[in-house]
Every structure is written in C-alpha cells, then in structure tokens.
Image (tube, rainbow, N blue to C red; front, side):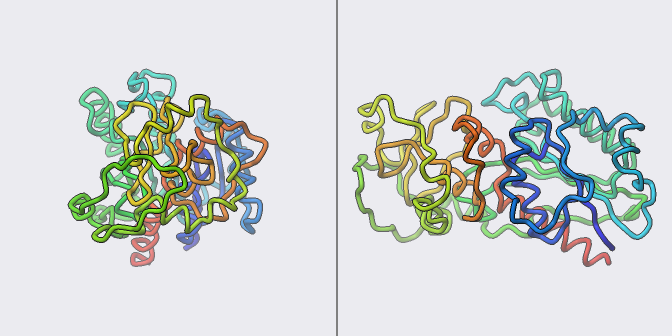
Length: 359
C-alpha cells in the first residue's frame, strides 16, 4: 500500500533524505525555522518529488488544533489502502549533556512532549522519534522519557527503542542517537516483532577494538600513508576524497583563522580539547556538534574544516549542497543538528523491509 511520510522538525532534512532514498515519499515537511526550510528546499531543488501537502514553517503546536489539521490534511481520516508515518527529531539541546540540560521544561525540551501529543492525537500507523542519548541515559531525562513512552503505550502503540551509533552504519563519526519506533496496534495487530539495527554495516565492538591512529604533530600539506588494520570507509580522509570536497559548492565556506599559532600547535588527531579539536585523516570524527563552541580543525591544512567537509562527515552524498546565501554560523548549526544520513537511511531501510514483508 502507499505510505505517506509526514516530517516534523525537519531541519535540513537528513532524516527525510534517508527515508526518500529507502523508497518512502515525504508528503509533508514542517520546519519552524524559515532559513532551515529554505535550505531544505534548495538542497532538493532537483528532486522530482514534491510534498503533496507542501512545506510549512508553523509551530508544530499549530497542528494540535483540529481546525488547522483538517484544513491542511482534509483527507487524513480516510485511511483506507494507505499507511501514514510520522518522522521527527525534536530539538534536543535541553536533553544533551553538552547542551543546556534543562530537560522537559526547557524551551526545546517541551517540543518532544508536543511531538508525542501530536502522535497520540493524530494516530499515525507508525512513527520514528530521534533524539540525543541523554534522553534515555540521564536519570532526570529518562523519567520524562519513560512517562512519554507510557502515554504512547496507553494510546495503542507497540514501542521499540535503541541507542544507535552512526559508526555502525558507515558514517565517519562517533555519534550516538536514541531511536524510538512505534507501531499502531490497531493497524498492525498485537504481536508485533521488530528489531532496530538490521541494516548496520559494522559491529561497534569490532570498530572500537581496532588499532586506530592516535596523534601526530601537525604538518601542513603533509602526506601520510593509510595504516593497516582499520576500516578505510570510516575515516575522514576517505569521505573527503569520496565527496571531492575541494570542488564542492560549499568548499570555500570556511571560518577564518584568527590565531594561526594556536591552531598549528594542535596535533593531528588531538580531540582532547573542549573546543578546538583536530581531526585525524585516517580516523573517524568525534560527534559533529558544531555551534556549541566546538571547532573541528582540518587534519593537514592550517584551517577549520569547510562546510563541504562537515557535510562529508555527516555522510551526505556529494550532490547535497547548502544555500550559498546563508551565514556560516547557520550552515554549521544546520549540519550539526542533523541526523547522519547513512544512519537515517539504515533506520528507514529497517522500516521499509519490515513493511514489505508484512505486505
């Protein structure tokens, strides 16, 4: 049957792109930040598929009101011969240990409750919620998370969750994300069997057991032979070459270096600092959390990484480009907020395969 995907808190749409390339159609896109939404549309300017219900920058609370919902989706209640899925990653700094840590009471934290309320009220056949692992692992936040899960269970959903590391999906980045998938029992029955992670490419314990290079003195424009005993496709250099970052549209989008001596003194592969971290060309990147005073430096060039290189670290296809007119700060913030593309694709492939088997 046809599957309609409604995307909320879409950002640049990395999660959406994963679902699109897994075979789903994104039929509605909601992103409150107009600059993000404009960048989303620019990145998909060559996409032949246009969301049936369009693009919206309304506050997601707008869709909790029945009049607004029915006006936007007049045929929503006619659910015969189609599935409807919600996907979304509500803003997460209030649940992040590296963020504000205000939890469910924070301005952004409240949006997770709103997303849950929207799911309960509109009853999609399935949904995906993506967030930081702090929502699951921090005691204060987990109490809130468990309450939300209980509300979803009481609303007729079977739930499956997991902490997934982007590395295991082939992303050159050590980044853990909470994935919660829910299925409406009224649609799929009471004996639902589902597993997140069937499309992982690598085992995390195996990745971590390898002898990855550590640090070496920074040498501008230097060559360094790839060491044996690593997974080349999980390295920064592999993705820089794969995406031809030097010739990418966003290759010149780089913050200027104000204190060159300070940058040069940081060794290649030294990510111990709270702010300035120099990537190692033959290792994966730490979490791409740009925007929280975290600066990633190029492995062998005396500068910060470019927007094109940040997109590569998020495992985006080389064809993915950011609107040139946006400020540098906005570009890096947008990239850092996104779900790594290959992780999104893996989660989407899990769902697609499961639904196909059901059909």
